[in-house]
Amino acid sequence: MTHPLFEIVQTSMGVTSIKNKVVGEIMHNPVGPWAEANALYIDQSRLRERLTGAGSSHIAEELVVFDVGLGAAANAVATLSCARSLKVRRPLRLISFEVDLELLEFTLLHAASFDHLQGFEEAIETLLRKGEWTEEGITWQLRHGDFVKLIREETHSPHLIFYDPYSPKKNEEMWSSKVFGDLREKCANEEGTLLLTYSRATPIRVALLNAGFFVGVGLATGLKDETTQAATQLTQLSSPLDAGWLERWKRSHRALPLDAQAHEEPKIREQILAHEQFKTI
Ligand SMILES: C[S@@+](CC[C@H](N)C(=O)[O-])C[C@H]1O[C@@H](n2cnc3c(N)ncnc32)[C@H](O)[C@@H]1O
Image 1 (cartoon, helix red, strand yellow):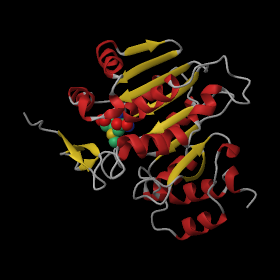
Image 2 (cartoon, rainbow, N blue to C red; image 1 turned 60 degrees about the vertical axis):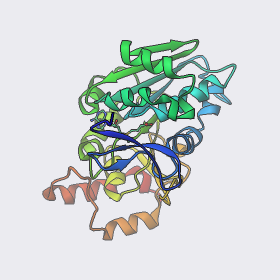
Image 3 (tube, rainbow, N blue to C red; image 1 turned 45 degrees about the vertical axis):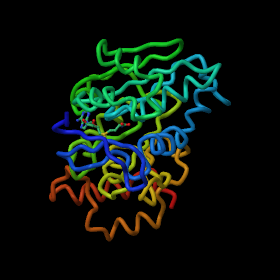
């Protein structure tokens, strides 16, 4: 039977993925869910090194990962798979936020179409049923509801944030400086927080800067020549936005966060120009 919302499709590169027929987006197009999850989130965050605790004095403490937009669980399963592949590792708490579990339920029904889900069916099923799944040293929790509200009540502080809602065009509120500000308030741990996301749009980067993050260029993925990193410490960024970006931003017509009002422009421009990131350039 066909599903009213979702269908299994092949991306332009011939990889199996899922299309949301209403939003009109194929997830992780064109490289597919597994390649994108690993390149953009797992490898770029150096999750393996963080979990093995290389050079860290925090090895006994939990590493907390926020998976924002659980969707079909590719990023979550890539996180769990990375942890499972390591013998000795730091405890992991993966917190997945999702407003609508229909996609995950659809994915679980079609788990056989996705190689990366093999061996994780029981974990997904338990997460859906109980809101939590655990295995030695790994806790996977579901926060079911609207992230915009849930983030204000969250009690854990993330070390990593995999920020993967639908695109700003389709999911505007999730990319607002208000939501990034609420998220930034939760980034209170000593080790710092690194956020990775696929968007490279100027209003998103300005919203992140405005929320108090340092912001940099992230790895290329799929058809995107760059993505975005944001962090609570400048040293966590591999390529911080520089004087060239700031000059282009000053002339940009898309200079404000998506939720900014026109009258706020002078104040926001002043705040960005005074941001610590640009003080020395
Ligand atoms: C592109 S999909 C995520 C794909 C997923 N990360 C994966 O690896 O399969 C975007 C997801 O974000 C969820 N989402 C969008 N807005 C949300 C919100 N306000 N709160 C929680 N989840 C949201 C959508 O329901 C959708 O499942």
